[in-house]
Image 1 (cartoon, rainbow over the protein chains, first blue to last red):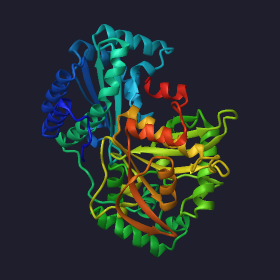
Image 2 (cartoon, chains in turn blue, green):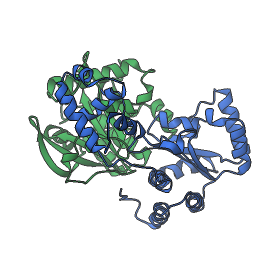
Image 3 (spheres, rainbow over the protein chains, first blue to last red):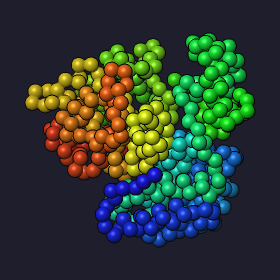
Length: 251
Length: 213
C-alpha cells in the first residue's frame, strides 16, 4: 500500500507521522492511543471505528473503538443503538464518505438518537468513511468536529484525502493487532464457481452439469482448489472459503 | 447529466439499472465481442454484487440512460487485481486508500458520436468529468482503469489522458492496458475546457444525497 501526492506542505508531515504510528500498531491499546493522536492533530471532537466481517472477532458484534465519553458508550449500549445507528449501516450502502447531515431526519428514532448524541458531546458535524478490505472485511471510520457549517465544508474539502488514508491504514492495523488471517491463495473465476456449488452441496456430477463442463474438468478444478487452499478435502475447502468470504453466487 | 447510484440503490432505480446493464451487454458483448456473461440481454459480473458506485449518464430531457461507468475501491476486490493481474509485473498490485478503479465504461449506440467541433461525444466527456468530480469529493488521488487502445484515444481526446502502467497484453483481438488517471482540480479543468463543460455534471440531488457536499 502506498500513499502519494498529498498536499506538499507542513500538513503532509502530520498525516505521515500519524500513519507511521498507525502502521506500527501491534496491540488494541495502541489503536486507541493513535485515535487520540489523530483527534489532537486535526482538532477533532471525536473519532470512531467499527469493523465487520473479520472472522471470529466480529462474529457476534462489530469490533468498535471510540473516543466518546463512557457515559455515551453506556447509554448507546443500553439502548441497543447499534441496531438503529445509521453510521453502522453505511458499509452496506455505499463506498462514498457520508456526511451525517445526509441521514434521514424524517425518521423520528434517528432524530432522537442524534439529538442525544449531540447532548452527549459526540460532536456538531460528522462524516463517516467506509473501508472495503480484500477478503470481505469492512469497516466504517468516523470523525466529528465542532464549528460552523462553512468551516466544516472547508475542513472536509481540505482533509478528505487524509481521512481516506487514515481509515484504510487504521483498518489494516485492526486486522494486524487482532491477528486476522489473510489467505495467501488466489482462486480463478472458474474455481470460485466450483467452490460455490460445492458449498451448496452439489456433487461433482451436478456441478459438471450446472457449469456445462465435464466431470473430469470439475475434479481438475477441485484438485487445484484443495492444493491452493491447503485443504485436505472439499468440506475443509468450503469451510475456509466461507471464512474468507469467497463463497458468493457467481455471475 | 450524471447521477451517482450505489449498487444498494438498485431496488429504487430498476429502470436505470436495467438500461445500464443492457447497454453494457450491447457494448461489451455485441460490439466489442468481449468474453462477458450476458443473460436475457443483460451484462453483469461478480463485482456488480459487491455494491460498487455507478455514475450513470441521463438525457436531460427524457431521463433516458445514455451510458455509465462503475467505481470500486482498490483496497477491496477489483478487476485489475482479481481478473487482469498479468497486466502488471509479477507480484505488483495497486492497493491504495486514495485510488479507486473504474470499469465498464460504456455508451449507448448512437450517443457515442461527437457533435460538430468535438472529437468525443458529450456523454463520454460528462462521464469522465463526473469521475473526477466524485474522486475529488471522496478525497482520491487517482483512478485506475483497464482499457483498450480505442478507449485511450477517447480519453485523450476528452482531455483526460491516462498514465499507462505495466505491460500491455493482447486479450482476444485487442491490446489491453492498465492506466492511472489523475484526480485533481487541474484534471477537471482540462476535461471541462476540452469538452466545453461549464459546470458540475452531477445531478445536484444525487451529489447531495451522497456527500452533503
